[in-house]
Length: 371
Image (cartoon, rainbow, N blue to C red):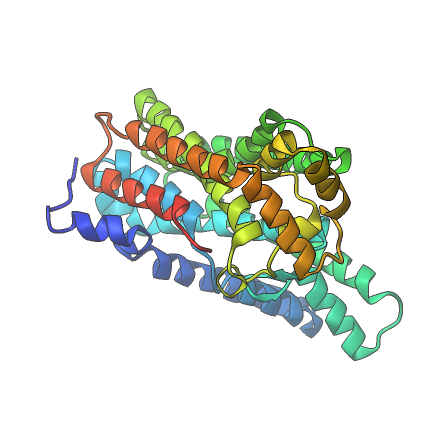
């Protein structure tokens, strides 16, 4: 197994997403896919260009967490010969996860009725604006939703293609594809459970955590790690270590996302302040606040949460309730405990030292972020 030199370790912990130049390499792979697929769509009609442009804008940013976990999951268990000959092809394979994530984001914004994504209009809003600007017939909103759904479907299709056309041995790809297929089903199940929680008005902390596990934790961290391990044909012990690391970290990642959805700086998150409150998201943070609220606080929660017209005063009221009930402090404590549990699982033989350093850095990056 390869190990990092002592002088490398601080850099791997400080900027783990930049290790192995992962982000620019993934971006280059994304750009190649968009160029190839854009040419195919252009051969159908020049009217396809707005679809490609919307996706190009969406995929020009992002943390690249899922490709990072998949890549370092592979690096953690790869043999020396694999590392020498497969590295670039693995980057292509894990780039498919960015297209799956794009699909999830586009469709999620439609389901939530979100206005923005990464500081830009959400895809359905963008296409509604195109319809309105061109003064086409029918409803701009319906056109926007329809176009966004189709764009998400394209991303889902391309995600499969990017993975399966990577220049890797077929048996390695088939091992990864089996996990990828399971991950997609888990993600869709989590999305439905999320919709159900909002429709039912939320429930217990345990129900909210179930949504977190399937909508985010497994999909963001555990399964990408497993995809990387499958490419490397890792032993069972590595898969188990990755689950022990990935599941609690994925839950902590989503809990941090929930906190940012209420208390984050719009200039950093790219979404309006309190947007999750307007959407009525039934997060763990909200479940704890609801469980601990007194009669007056509970009434305010029921009246304000999910109001699309919630103003700054309403956002401030809900933030105060979340803080006063101790829900924010309890969530921060959960994040710290889950991070500690996650990192303890990396102390296992069979994982490359450099990968372990990067995965440690990624754990802190996922839970201490401001975006």
